[in-house]
Each structure stands twice: as structure tokens, then as C-alpha cells.
Length: 294
Image 1 (cartoon, rainbow, N blue to C red):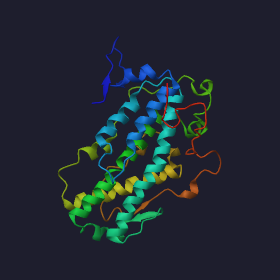
Image 2: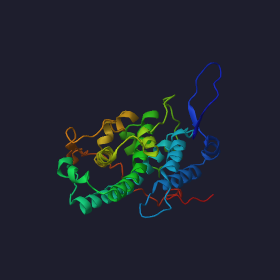
Image 3: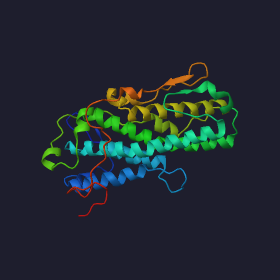
Image 4: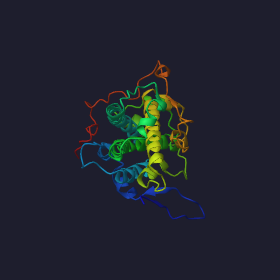
């Protein structure tokens, strides 16, 4: 458990807070220290499927839970976190997607693209793959859960602090504290951070047979690809709450899931600044790259 309920007084209910609430409260008044902590924590989501030293999904969930419940007081705090999440996803997400695509091409001779996923083209062959290959595909896909977790965390922060995409796009962490350290005036209370899709991945169902497990892997790939491409094309502008980001829980079948529609890249906004712009590090704030000094 990474969050605790604050003891109620005067018969009023209070929101949850992270177990590291006090630690963050000690450094949050310093922009350099709090940004340095955020940057270092987000580095724990840089998974590499080829190594055995990566942070486990359980540990990443612990970190995300704390990031969701830290006692943010000024707008710069959640906005900086969202900016860093965008940068992390833009790098790791495309890498994870390409790794799974390479495996599909290697074992199924199926070339995936950004237009859609035609399950009928390879589902029959996919269901007959050996358990060894399925385990390799499943392990590759499991690394994408960290990216999904960050997407859910971003949606949660947008929902809690009523942050629209215009405000996120306009945010520049190199601006002076007089501009970015304005107090948070809107905060939704009593909303829990519960990424069910991640919890299900940590404690998978033991009731699925071999065929159901293979179909679940295909569904997870479809969900990951759809939401990652939505991130790339700014389709997440329409997300109003955390529930809008979560994949549906319906079971994938060969008859009901043939081609998954994906966001069209033609819908990308023509005006404005790209929200995943390159972050400037040649500023007075030496916490931009996570290497901060007192």
C-alpha cells in the first residue's frame, strides 16, 4: 500500500496522501530540489527489455502512486511532472512498440503499421505459436505497461487539477518562478488513483487457458498501440477523465475484433506549439536534466 487516508476531523472526509507525503513536503518549496526528485523518479520508468536490472512493474506502480498523491501546492508542480511524462513516453513508447512489431515480423511475417491492426491476417497462426515464443511476446509487451502507467498518471493529474491541453502546451519550465509558481486554485478531492489495467497485469488471472491467454496478448497490444498513437497525434485532447484513457475490459474475439481503428494523423493540430517540444536545458534551472546541486 502506497497511500494512506488522512485521519478525519469534524466528521469531514479527507483525500488520500502518499506514504512519502512528508518527504516531499520538506523539499517542495525549492523548485530545484522538487524537480530533481521528480526527474529521478521518472527515470525508474526507463525499461530496457534486454537487461535484468530494470525496475519491476510493482516498483513503478509504487512510484506512480506517490507521484499521484504528492502534496502539490503550485501549478508548476503537476505541469512539470506532465511535461517530463510526455518526454519519457515520446522516447520509450515508440521503442517498446517497435520491439513488439519486430517480433510479429520475425515469427508471423506480419508487417505492422500505424493505420490499423487486421487480426484476421495473423490470428490463426498466432494462436498456434509455441509457448516459448508466446512468453517472449508477453515479456516484451509487459515492458509497455510502464508507459501505459505514465499515460494513466498523466490523465489522472489532468483530471484532478483541471489542466487542459492549452495550459500544458503553454507551460515552459524555464520561465521564472513568478510565472510558474502560482497557487493551485482547483483540485478535485476524493478521487483515487487506481490503474486497474496495471493491477491486472501484476496479478493476472489464473483461469485463462492457452487460447484465451494468446487473445489477451493481442488485445493488450491493440490497447497499447491505440493509446500510444493517440498520444502521438494529440488525440488525447478529448480525454476528460482517467476512465476515458483506460482500455475497455471486453474480451477480444476473432469475430468481434478484426480491425482496430486508430487515430488519424491528419487530425493533428495545425496551430500552436507541439506539447512534446524539446526541453531547453540551457537555463538557470539546473534541475532540467535531473542533475541538481544544492
